Amino acid sequence: MTALDPAAEFDRQVRTLTGLGYPELSGLTPERFAERLAPLRATALAAASDTEHAHDPGSGRVPFVLVVTRELAPIEETMPRTALHGGKLPGFVDRSFEPGSLGRFVAVPEAELPDPQAYLLLGVERGEEFCGAVPREAMATVAGRGRTLLTIEEGIALLTHFPQVLVKNKCFSLGGSRSGDRRVPAIWISQKAPKLGWCWEGNPHTWLGMASAAGRRAAHAAPPGA
Image 1 (cartoon, rainbow, N blue to C red):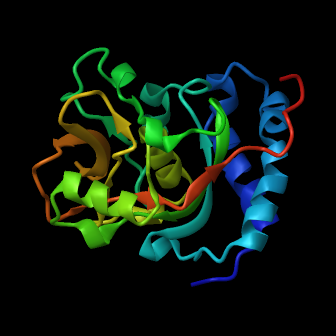
Image 2: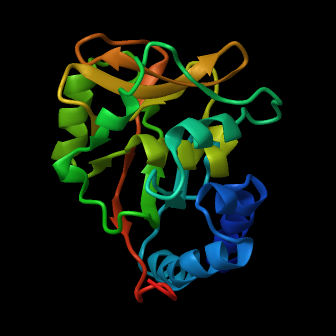
């Protein structure tokens, strides 16, 4: 576990997104993109001061993650901008998602997204304790702890900012996005790259846990031009 400078970490995450082309995906210049996210910087500092969430990416625990949703950057474009820690092959969306189906996997009501475009996810854990557990039972356990399940965009954000969280036998489901059926999205390793796929809610996998967070927080003030 390492000490964290929240201001420096927030700035790093903004640079990561900018370097990966998120401004272009969002239809913004790099400057306007940075302005859109800037109000969240104070939120990151406040969250770090009033919580004690661990910063240990290698163990799958981080205090905050800057999330940009599909409203700004499409999932089909952000997943290929991920990679394994030290890897070169781009992430991909599995073909098991039939055409148009990703659009039906939306945040469950319990997720309560604080902003439709960008916000912070707090107290994140990849949830390897649930490896081998039945997903629907793991989701119930997470809810019983007062924690929230990660959405697809949040899982991609976690991997984007902290690629070291995705390792063999410690991959994670994203129960915060559902499509009204028994499928639960998940990110795991396939062909030496991250893959966004799905598994049945009643089928356990020894290498697939259940990611969760302590909560979400929007900017303290509206972004410029909003």
